[in-house]
Image 1 (tube, rainbow, N blue to C red):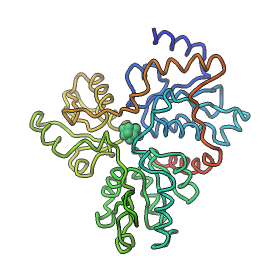
Image 2: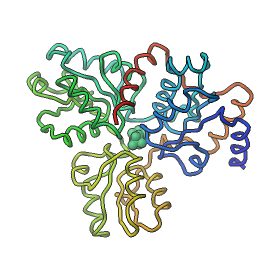
Image 3: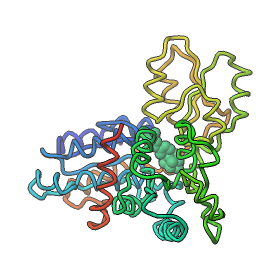
Image 4: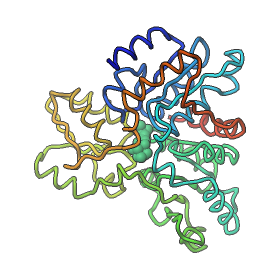
Length: 360
Ligand code: 13P
Ligand code: SF4
Protein backbone atom coordinates (compact mmCIF):
# COMPACT_ATOMS: atom_id res chain seq x y z
CA UNK A 1 0.00 0.00 0.00
CA UNK A 2 2.69 2.50 1.03
CA UNK A 3 4.80 1.50 -1.98
CA UNK A 4 1.79 2.17 -4.22
CA UNK A 5 1.14 5.62 -2.66
CA UNK A 6 4.79 6.60 -3.09
CA UNK A 7 5.05 5.29 -6.65
CA UNK A 8 1.98 7.14 -7.88
CA UNK A 9 2.97 10.40 -6.14
CA UNK A 10 6.45 10.06 -7.63
CA UNK A 11 5.08 9.64 -11.12
CA UNK A 12 2.81 12.68 -10.71
CA UNK A 13 5.73 14.82 -9.49
CA UNK A 14 8.14 13.52 -12.15
CA UNK A 15 11.35 15.55 -12.48
CA UNK A 16 10.19 18.06 -9.86
CA UNK A 17 11.25 15.60 -7.15
CA UNK A 18 14.60 13.94 -6.46
CA UNK A 19 14.91 11.32 -3.72
CA UNK A 20 18.42 10.77 -2.38
CA UNK A 21 19.24 7.83 -0.10
CA UNK A 22 22.26 6.95 2.01
CA UNK A 23 23.51 3.35 2.14
CA UNK A 24 22.48 3.01 5.81
CA UNK A 25 18.76 3.35 5.04
CA UNK A 26 16.26 0.47 5.06
CA UNK A 27 15.96 -1.47 1.78
CA UNK A 28 12.27 -0.56 1.43
CA UNK A 29 13.13 3.16 1.65
CA UNK A 30 16.02 2.87 -0.79
CA UNK A 31 13.71 1.13 -3.25
CA UNK A 32 12.24 4.60 -3.91
CA UNK A 33 15.49 6.54 -4.08
CA UNK A 34 16.51 7.96 -7.45
CA UNK A 35 20.14 7.88 -6.31
CA UNK A 36 21.89 5.98 -3.53
CA UNK A 37 25.42 6.73 -2.38
CA UNK A 38 27.93 7.69 0.28
CA UNK A 39 28.17 11.22 1.72
CA UNK A 40 30.52 12.44 -0.99
CA UNK A 41 28.42 11.10 -3.87
CA UNK A 42 25.17 12.39 -2.38
CA UNK A 43 26.62 15.88 -1.84
CA UNK A 44 27.83 16.00 -5.44
CA UNK A 45 24.53 14.69 -6.77
CA UNK A 46 22.53 17.24 -4.76
CA UNK A 47 24.65 20.02 -6.28
CA UNK A 48 24.53 18.69 -9.85
CA UNK A 49 20.94 17.46 -10.17
CA UNK A 50 19.50 20.68 -8.82
CA UNK A 51 21.72 22.95 -10.94
CA UNK A 52 19.07 23.72 -13.51
CA UNK A 53 16.00 22.09 -14.94
CA UNK A 54 12.86 21.32 -13.10
CA UNK A 55 13.85 20.03 -9.65
CA UNK A 56 11.75 21.70 -6.92
CA UNK A 57 12.18 19.22 -4.06
CA UNK A 58 14.82 16.88 -2.72
CA UNK A 59 13.65 14.33 -0.16
CA UNK A 60 16.79 13.32 1.69
CA UNK A 61 16.65 9.82 3.16
CA UNK A 62 19.64 10.19 5.45
CA UNK A 63 20.46 12.33 8.48
CA UNK A 64 20.27 16.02 9.31
CA UNK A 65 23.80 17.12 8.34
CA UNK A 66 23.32 15.49 4.93
CA UNK A 67 20.09 17.40 4.32
CA UNK A 68 21.77 20.66 5.41
CA UNK A 69 24.63 19.98 3.02
CA UNK A 70 22.17 19.30 0.20
CA UNK A 71 20.33 22.56 0.97
CA UNK A 72 23.56 24.59 0.92
CA UNK A 73 24.75 23.06 -2.35
CA UNK A 74 21.39 22.94 -4.13
CA UNK A 75 20.69 26.58 -3.26
CA UNK A 76 24.16 28.00 -3.87
CA UNK A 77 24.11 31.48 -5.47
CA UNK A 78 25.12 30.06 -8.86
CA UNK A 79 22.41 27.38 -8.77
CA UNK A 80 19.82 29.95 -7.70
CA UNK A 81 20.85 32.19 -10.56
CA UNK A 82 20.55 29.34 -13.08
CA UNK A 83 17.04 28.65 -11.81
CA UNK A 84 16.03 32.31 -11.92
CA UNK A 85 16.00 32.57 -8.11
CA UNK A 86 13.78 29.51 -7.52
CA UNK A 87 14.77 27.50 -4.42
CA UNK A 88 14.93 23.73 -4.20
CA UNK A 89 13.36 22.70 -0.91
CA UNK A 90 15.21 19.94 0.92
CA UNK A 91 13.00 17.68 3.02
CA UNK A 92 14.09 15.31 5.80
CA UNK A 93 11.32 12.78 6.54
CA UNK A 94 12.08 12.78 10.29
CA UNK A 95 13.51 15.95 11.82
CA UNK A 96 14.95 13.93 14.71
CA UNK A 97 17.20 11.98 12.35
CA UNK A 98 20.49 13.48 13.51
CA UNK A 99 24.03 12.14 13.88
CA UNK A 100 25.29 11.65 17.43
CA UNK A 101 28.87 12.19 16.27
CA UNK A 102 28.00 15.51 14.63
CA UNK A 103 26.38 16.55 17.93
CA UNK A 104 29.70 16.03 19.75
CA UNK A 105 31.11 19.28 18.33
CA UNK A 106 29.20 22.53 18.77
CA UNK A 107 30.21 25.92 17.42
CA UNK A 108 30.92 27.54 20.83
CA UNK A 109 33.21 24.74 22.00
CA UNK A 110 35.17 24.72 18.74
CA UNK A 111 35.48 28.51 18.87
CA UNK A 112 36.74 28.27 22.46
CA UNK A 113 39.32 25.66 21.36
CA UNK A 114 40.42 27.99 18.53
CA UNK A 115 40.81 30.92 20.93
CA UNK A 116 42.79 28.84 23.42
CA UNK A 117 45.07 27.66 20.62
CA UNK A 118 45.54 31.25 19.45
CA UNK A 119 47.04 32.11 22.83
CA UNK A 120 49.71 29.41 22.48
CA UNK A 121 50.58 29.00 18.81
CA UNK A 122 50.40 31.13 15.69
CA UNK A 123 46.80 30.45 14.64
CA UNK A 124 47.64 31.31 11.04
CA UNK A 125 49.57 28.02 11.03
CA UNK A 126 46.37 26.07 11.80
CA UNK A 127 43.81 25.02 9.21
CA UNK A 128 40.38 23.95 10.44
CA UNK A 129 39.01 20.83 8.74
CA UNK A 130 35.56 19.49 9.47
CA UNK A 131 34.19 16.06 8.70
CA UNK A 132 31.00 16.55 6.69
CA UNK A 133 29.25 14.89 9.66
CA UNK A 134 28.96 18.25 11.40
CA UNK A 135 26.61 21.21 11.70
CA UNK A 136 26.43 23.86 8.98
CA UNK A 137 27.81 26.37 11.56
CA UNK A 138 31.02 24.38 11.81
CA UNK A 139 31.34 24.16 8.05
CA UNK A 140 30.94 27.94 8.01
CA UNK A 141 33.61 28.20 10.74
CA UNK A 142 36.01 26.40 8.40
CA UNK A 143 34.93 28.34 5.31
CA UNK A 144 35.57 31.65 7.06
CA UNK A 145 39.09 30.63 8.11
CA UNK A 146 40.45 29.20 4.86
CA UNK A 147 39.52 25.67 5.93
CA UNK A 148 37.66 22.85 4.27
CA UNK A 149 35.20 19.98 4.82
CA UNK A 150 35.89 16.33 3.98
CA UNK A 151 34.07 13.03 3.74
CA UNK A 152 35.30 9.56 4.61
CA UNK A 153 35.89 9.09 0.87
CA UNK A 154 38.31 12.00 0.38
CA UNK A 155 39.81 12.63 3.85
CA UNK A 156 43.34 11.79 2.70
CA UNK A 157 43.24 14.11 -0.30
CA UNK A 158 41.83 16.86 1.93
CA UNK A 159 44.50 16.35 4.63
CA UNK A 160 47.25 16.42 2.02
CA UNK A 161 45.89 19.65 0.60
CA UNK A 162 45.41 21.13 4.10
CA UNK A 163 49.01 20.37 5.11
CA UNK A 164 50.25 21.93 1.87
CA UNK A 165 48.52 25.14 3.01
CA UNK A 166 49.44 25.28 6.71
CA UNK A 167 51.57 23.49 9.29
CA UNK A 168 48.80 22.04 11.49
CA UNK A 169 45.26 20.70 11.13
CA UNK A 170 42.49 21.11 13.70
CA UNK A 171 40.05 18.32 12.78
CA UNK A 172 36.54 17.77 14.15
CA UNK A 173 34.40 15.98 15.19
CA UNK A 174 35.64 12.41 14.47
CA UNK A 175 38.89 11.53 16.20
CA UNK A 176 39.04 8.13 14.46
CA UNK A 177 38.74 9.35 10.87
CA UNK A 178 41.31 12.05 11.69
CA UNK A 179 43.75 9.66 13.36
CA UNK A 180 43.37 6.96 10.69
CA UNK A 181 43.98 9.47 7.91
CA UNK A 182 47.02 11.03 9.59
CA UNK A 183 48.58 7.64 10.46
CA UNK A 184 48.11 6.38 6.87
CA UNK A 185 49.94 9.53 5.72
CA UNK A 186 52.89 8.57 7.91
CA UNK A 187 52.46 11.32 10.50
CA UNK A 188 54.04 10.06 13.77
CA UNK A 189 51.62 9.35 16.64
CA UNK A 190 53.44 11.83 18.89
CA UNK A 191 52.44 14.63 16.52
CA UNK A 192 48.77 13.60 16.66
CA UNK A 193 47.03 14.85 19.79
CA UNK A 194 43.49 14.74 21.09
CA UNK A 195 41.48 17.75 22.23
CA UNK A 196 39.22 16.44 24.99
CA UNK A 197 36.02 18.47 25.18
CA UNK A 198 35.41 17.83 28.85
CA UNK A 199 38.77 19.24 29.97
CA UNK A 200 38.64 22.79 31.26
CA UNK A 201 41.97 23.94 29.74
CA UNK A 202 43.71 23.22 26.45
CA UNK A 203 41.65 20.08 25.88
CA UNK A 204 43.73 18.34 28.56
CA UNK A 205 47.06 19.08 26.81
CA UNK A 206 49.98 21.25 27.81
CA UNK A 207 51.46 24.05 25.73
CA UNK A 208 54.51 21.97 24.76
CA UNK A 209 52.53 19.06 23.30
CA UNK A 210 50.36 21.48 21.36
CA UNK A 211 53.44 23.24 19.95
CA UNK A 212 54.87 19.87 18.87
CA UNK A 213 51.62 18.70 17.24
CA UNK A 214 50.68 18.59 13.57
CA UNK A 215 47.20 17.10 13.90
CA UNK A 216 44.79 18.14 16.67
CA UNK A 217 41.81 15.84 16.91
CA UNK A 218 38.48 16.67 18.49
CA UNK A 219 37.52 13.68 20.66
CA UNK A 220 34.19 12.87 18.95
CA UNK A 221 33.37 9.41 17.66
CA UNK A 222 30.64 7.35 16.03
CA UNK A 223 29.05 4.96 18.50
CA UNK A 224 28.09 2.62 15.64
CA UNK A 225 31.69 2.21 14.45
CA UNK A 226 33.55 2.56 17.74
CA UNK A 227 31.87 -0.68 18.86
CA UNK A 228 34.08 -2.75 16.54
CA UNK A 229 37.13 -4.03 18.38
CA UNK A 230 40.38 -5.61 17.30
CA UNK A 231 39.28 -8.83 19.10
CA UNK A 232 36.42 -9.17 16.59
CA UNK A 233 39.03 -9.79 13.89
CA UNK A 234 40.49 -12.72 15.88
CA UNK A 235 37.02 -14.15 16.50
CA UNK A 236 35.98 -14.01 12.86
CA UNK A 237 39.29 -15.44 11.61
CA UNK A 238 38.80 -18.45 13.89
CA UNK A 239 35.53 -19.19 12.09
CA UNK A 240 36.45 -18.12 8.52
CA UNK A 241 40.27 -18.37 8.22
CA UNK A 242 40.56 -16.88 4.69
CA UNK A 243 38.24 -13.92 5.40
CA UNK A 244 39.26 -10.43 4.30
CA UNK A 245 38.54 -7.61 6.73
CA UNK A 246 37.11 -4.38 5.35
CA UNK A 247 36.13 -1.50 7.64
CA UNK A 248 34.92 2.09 7.59
CA UNK A 249 37.50 4.74 8.64
CA UNK A 250 35.27 5.80 11.56
CA UNK A 251 36.50 2.61 13.30
CA UNK A 252 39.26 2.67 15.93
CA UNK A 253 42.86 2.91 14.71
CA UNK A 254 43.97 -0.43 16.21
CA UNK A 255 41.25 -2.13 14.12
CA UNK A 256 41.95 -0.14 10.97
CA UNK A 257 45.66 -1.01 11.19
CA UNK A 258 44.81 -4.74 11.16
CA UNK A 259 42.13 -4.53 8.45
CA UNK A 260 42.91 -5.54 4.85
CA UNK A 261 41.00 -2.59 3.45
CA UNK A 262 39.51 0.66 4.70
CA UNK A 263 37.08 2.97 2.94
CA UNK A 264 33.81 4.84 2.70
CA UNK A 265 30.50 3.04 2.29
CA UNK A 266 30.72 3.47 -1.50
CA UNK A 267 34.24 2.01 -1.48
CA UNK A 268 33.17 -0.98 0.64
CA UNK A 269 30.26 -1.71 -1.70
CA UNK A 270 32.36 -1.41 -4.85
CA UNK A 271 35.24 -3.49 -3.50
CA UNK A 272 33.05 -6.38 -2.38
CA UNK A 273 30.84 -6.29 -5.49
CA UNK A 274 33.89 -6.45 -7.76
CA UNK A 275 35.63 -9.24 -5.82
CA UNK A 276 35.61 -12.76 -7.36
CA UNK A 277 32.90 -15.32 -6.57
CA UNK A 278 33.86 -17.35 -3.52
CA UNK A 279 35.54 -14.42 -1.72
CA UNK A 280 34.89 -14.05 2.00
CA UNK A 281 34.55 -10.63 3.67
CA UNK A 282 33.93 -9.48 7.24
CA UNK A 283 32.63 -5.93 7.18
CA UNK A 284 33.02 -3.35 9.95
CA UNK A 285 30.25 -0.86 9.35
CA UNK A 286 26.49 -0.32 9.80
CA UNK A 287 24.42 -3.51 9.94
CA UNK A 288 21.58 -2.74 7.50
CA UNK A 289 24.17 -1.94 4.86
CA UNK A 290 26.18 -5.11 5.50
CA UNK A 291 23.00 -7.22 5.27
CA UNK A 292 22.17 -5.61 1.91
CA UNK A 293 25.65 -6.24 0.50
CA UNK A 294 25.32 -9.90 1.61
CA UNK A 295 21.93 -10.24 -0.15
CA UNK A 296 23.35 -8.72 -3.34
CA UNK A 297 26.44 -10.98 -3.34
CA UNK A 298 25.10 -14.49 -2.79
CA UNK A 299 28.11 -16.01 -4.55
CA UNK A 300 30.35 -14.71 -1.72
CA UNK A 301 30.52 -15.06 2.04
CA UNK A 302 29.71 -11.66 3.56
CA UNK A 303 29.44 -11.36 7.33
CA UNK A 304 29.33 -8.60 9.89
CA UNK A 305 32.68 -8.15 11.62
CA UNK A 306 30.99 -8.40 15.00
CA UNK A 307 28.58 -11.23 15.91
CA UNK A 308 26.40 -8.43 17.31
CA UNK A 309 25.80 -6.09 14.35
CA UNK A 310 25.87 -2.35 14.93
CA UNK A 311 22.94 -0.26 13.68
CA UNK A 312 22.62 3.51 13.25
CA UNK A 313 19.37 4.23 15.06
CA UNK A 314 18.96 7.75 13.69
CA UNK A 315 19.34 6.61 10.09
CA UNK A 316 16.68 4.05 11.02
CA UNK A 317 14.22 6.81 11.92
CA UNK A 318 13.48 7.27 8.22
CA UNK A 319 10.78 4.67 7.67
CA UNK A 320 8.67 3.94 4.62
CA UNK A 321 5.64 5.44 6.39
CA UNK A 322 7.51 8.71 7.10
CA UNK A 323 8.71 8.87 3.52
CA UNK A 324 5.14 8.34 2.30
CA UNK A 325 3.91 11.10 4.65
CA UNK A 326 6.02 13.70 2.81
CA UNK A 327 4.10 13.48 -0.49
CA UNK A 328 0.66 14.88 0.29
CA UNK A 329 2.09 18.11 1.78
CA UNK A 330 4.30 18.51 -1.31
CA UNK A 331 1.41 17.97 -3.69
CA UNK A 332 -0.86 20.38 -1.83
CA UNK A 333 1.87 23.05 -1.98
CA UNK A 334 2.69 22.97 1.75
CA UNK A 335 5.80 20.80 2.06
CA UNK A 336 6.81 19.96 5.61
CA UNK A 337 10.09 19.03 7.34
CA UNK A 338 12.05 21.53 5.25
CA UNK A 339 15.73 21.94 6.14
CA UNK A 340 16.85 25.47 5.38
CA UNK A 341 20.24 26.76 6.50
CA UNK A 342 20.52 30.42 7.51
CA UNK A 343 21.79 32.47 4.55
CA UNK A 344 24.97 33.81 6.20
CA UNK A 345 25.95 30.42 7.55
CA UNK A 346 25.21 28.81 4.17
CA UNK A 347 27.42 31.35 2.37
CA UNK A 348 30.51 30.46 4.42
CA UNK A 349 29.73 26.75 4.68
CA UNK A 350 29.52 26.63 0.88
CA UNK A 351 33.18 27.71 0.66
CA UNK A 352 34.26 24.67 2.70
CA UNK A 353 31.91 22.32 0.82
CA UNK A 354 32.90 23.46 -2.65
CA UNK A 355 36.57 22.91 -1.81
CA UNK A 356 35.62 19.47 -0.48
CA UNK A 357 33.95 18.52 -3.76
CA UNK A 358 37.10 19.46 -5.69
CA UNK A 359 39.23 16.92 -3.79
CA UNK A 360 38.86 13.25 -4.50
P1 13P B 1 30.04 7.57 4.16
O1 13P B 1 30.44 8.91 3.70
O2 13P B 1 31.13 6.56 4.02
O3 13P B 1 28.78 7.14 3.48
O4 13P B 1 29.77 7.60 5.72
C1 13P B 1 28.83 8.42 6.31
C2 13P B 1 28.58 8.05 7.69
O5 13P B 1 27.91 8.73 8.42
C3 13P B 1 29.21 6.84 8.18
O6 13P B 1 28.88 6.65 9.50
FE1 SF4 C 1 26.48 9.49 12.51
FE2 SF4 C 1 27.60 7.15 13.09
FE3 SF4 C 1 25.07 7.22 12.24
FE4 SF4 C 1 27.11 7.75 10.55
S1 SF4 C 1 26.66 5.82 11.57
S2 SF4 C 1 25.21 8.92 10.75
S3 SF4 C 1 28.53 8.82 11.95
S4 SF4 C 1 25.88 8.11 14.16
